[in-house]
Length: 423
Image (cartoon, rainbow, N blue to C red; front, side, top):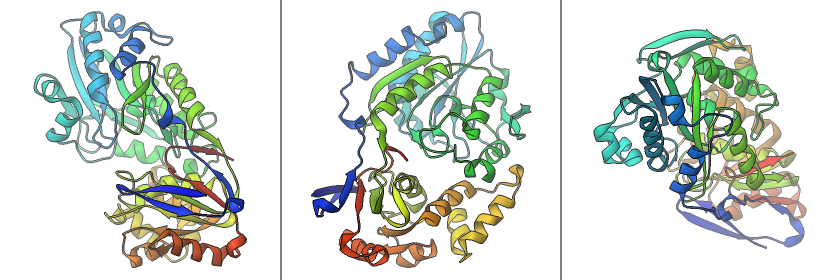
């Protein structure tokens, strides 16, 4: 069998005996042909909102309107979504005072150049745009989350007469799916609120997994936060590999989101094929530039590798580890069980940056050894409790030495971030 895996901007090919392969797990998302062009999909969604009046109706009589938009770290096709939403708002109230609030969460601020790339020059030149800062923006405490954490959000949202949001829906490795309620938490929340929501207790919950919303405590907190913040309307899209919208939903923050999640699940959900060795990637560039991001692809393999097996992770990682906190949480302590115990001992409001990513990474390592194919320095990979390799052939030799030779079974996941592997 010939297999091909994205690696950076290229592909790595590998041949393996058919009888060893338990399955090749792939998403049908990238083969889906949209019924209309992206702009028409968005306009149709806005004209036919799910369990909500049209945005133009909601905007009537509303003076201060906040439209929450995604930041530079998300491949949301905002040029297609935001203009029709602005037209809808002004259709309901031509004199509305509209602010585009960039939902950075705890990321760095989005630059003007990145804003132009995201929205186009006209919107950046003529619309009022504010970039959220989780530490420095005016913030207001508006309640206590179901989990007990403080809900502190950007004051612009609190003072608004109407709050709406754009975004996209993709599998998310602990919130279940991205989109909708995430525009509020973590989007425009304080660092304190984000840390409480990403606490070790919630990350450890078995419902905090890719594709799961029911029973997911992280999702529950996010929905509560969005309702408390009066998020009245969303427009979210599903995108393909070219970052083009192939499906759009609009309307009620929960119901529209659920419809988008159902569509995505119909294309991305695959059944696990347990194997001794699982080969996966982070989908190539731009998502495989560091080890931190590659943890997401590893969780797809985690769901189908046999306990005690091996995950071969291919991620170029030309930018290194991707997070100082993440790296040192792993590299400075040789015993990952001690690190995990430390995380679990911390209260909800004692969460530290990147703790959640490290915790998930430890969970993966508790299930399987990881052989890591990358351009990162070997010592860095070893510091993160993985075995470095520089080709898939070398990685297979290492993996076979761990799990029992050339008779070991193999499952391939060419793009670990585009599938939802269900055990």
